[in-house]
Length: 189
Image 1 (tube, one colour):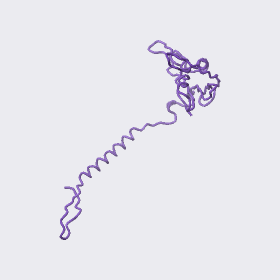
Image 2 (cartoon, helix red, strand yellow):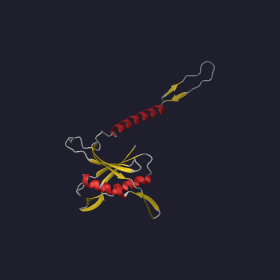
Image 3 (cartoon, one colour):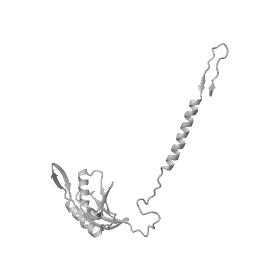
Image 4 (spheres, helix red, strand yellow):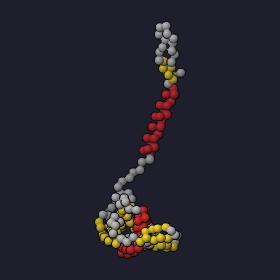
């Protein structure tokens, strides 16, 4: 049997026959090495190659041939106005200030804030500057909402509802339906 004799029994003393059984130690070592090798392979297989162009055009397409998308940036940092900024790859196309008027709406005992002036201005801006208006177009215009960390949730929902007021036709199953014209994302400072 695999073991190590640690000695014993010198002189008139009683013999201590102590053996350390090495087989469980070797088994544990082999299992540990197996898990290390397997996880090293799995972690290598689970890697995703990503670069700064995600979600941009595929690498095969020349960047000069693809025109960057226009994006609507809605800034609500100021307590007295909203700022609508249309940008195309970092270049400002147009800027519009909309006065901020918080309209409190109570429906079924629930309070909410609405911004009808903002909704009307976003819709008119989208009709003049927006890119994706055709019902067969599968892409949507992008709206980025800029807030600060102290903005209350009820105001965020009110602005998102105002952005979603702009509708466009979209083909679903062969018939055109009215859907929101924008996808909304956040940029919080």
